[in-house]
Image (tube, rainbow, N blue to C red; front, side, top):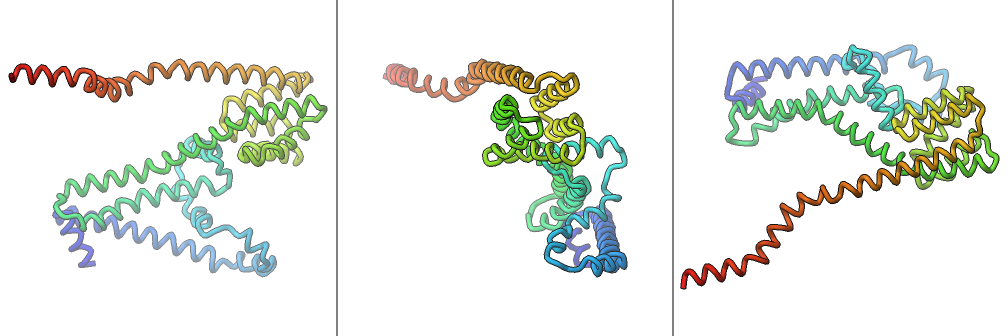
Length: 319
C-alpha cells in the first residue's frame, strides 16, 4: 500500500489527487475480486453443474462442446456491463450480427471487453507513466483521459471495420452467386435446391456468402417459412443488394410469379447498377486528382521548369 501511494505521489505530484486515484484503484480491484469470486462459486462449486457432468460424462465430444472461460466470464459479468436501454442493446446486437458474430454470448462479451479496456487502459497508463520523466500531473491526467477515450471508442471502431470488411466480401461475391442462382432456377431447380447448389459452388471463392445461403437453406429445412428465412438473410448481412433480392423473392413467392424470370430481371438491373456505380467512381477521379497534382506534382514541375531560369537571373543580377 505504501509503495503504491508513494508511486502515485511521485507520478501525480498531488497528494489529494493521488488519494482519489488510490481509492478508485482499490474499488476497481475489489470489484474484480468480487466478480471472480462469484464466477468461481457459480461454476466450480455449483451442485447442478456437477450433477450434469456426472450424468453426461466426460467424453471427448462433451469436452469440445464446453464453452470457454471467456464466454462463461462474460455471461457472469453481463448483468453489470450491459446497457439498460433495450434499443441500444438491439442496435449493438444487430451490428455484431453484421460483423459475423451470431452467438448468444457475443453481446455480453463485447461489452465485457469494452468495460475491461475502459478500466484497464487508464490503470496501465498510470502505472507505466512513472517511467517517463518530466511529465506533470496535468499531462498524466490527459494521458489517462486519452486512455479512457481509446478504451471506449476502440471496440466500436474495430467493430465498424469488421462490418465493412464482411459486407465488402459479401458484396464482391453477390454477382457470381446471383448469376449462378439464375442458371440453377432456369435449369429447373427449386429455390431451396438452387440456394444449396449455389452455396456449394461458391464455398471456395466466397465462403462468407456461401455460409449465409447454407444457413437460409438450413432454416427452411428446419420448418421456417421461406419468406421469413429470406428476411433473416437480409437482416444478417445488412446489404441493400441482398435486401432487394429478398424483397423480389418474397414477392415472387407471394404472387406466384416465375422465380427464374424475376431473378433474370433483377440480375440485369443489378448489372446496370454496378455499371452506373463504376461510371460514377470513374467520374470522381478527375476531381480527386486535383489535390495530389497541386500539392505533389506541380511544385516539382515548377522547380524543374523555372528553377534554371531563376538561377540564371540571380547570377545575372549578381554580375
